[in-house]
Length: 183
Image 1 (cartoon, rainbow, N blue to C red):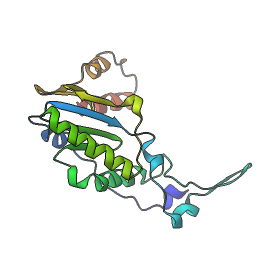
Image 2 (cartoon, helix red, strand yellow):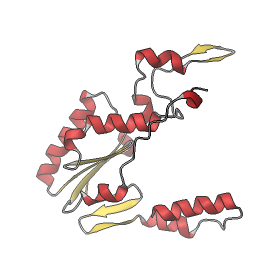
Image 3 (cartoon, rainbow, N blue to C red):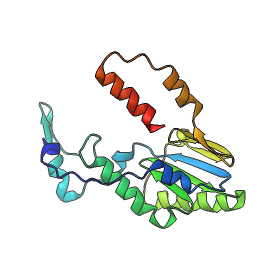
């Protein structure tokens, strides 16, 4: 019911090709995957009652942004852009809950990684360490492989397209076309 009365925030996601244009000359990469992205975004105290719901077991209110709330994606992306504003287009790419730290040298990369990790700690935004990768010369990010040699579609994604089952309905055709159009 809350989603029906919420004014939609049309916060634009960055264009992936614009993000990748920043990577020219980069040779060292680290990928940070945030843990439960939306759940790290606290709901403003005055808005907590708006998230209330009741079950036969009691009355509940969300203290953090629940997945599925109309503006959750926009609010989280806005938060991440504000957190990393002074580092965007220089040493970090942020796309929702995926962070890519990039650089053209090992020495500078250490400083950049330290900046990003300290920023996350200071803002109490937590990563899922098991999904993070550091000091890479080639990285899979947003469905693409990125290295000093260039950017190309991740071979696993090509395999997924080649092995896609034959669509049997208009809905399945649209789903397939959406996937193919992305790459």
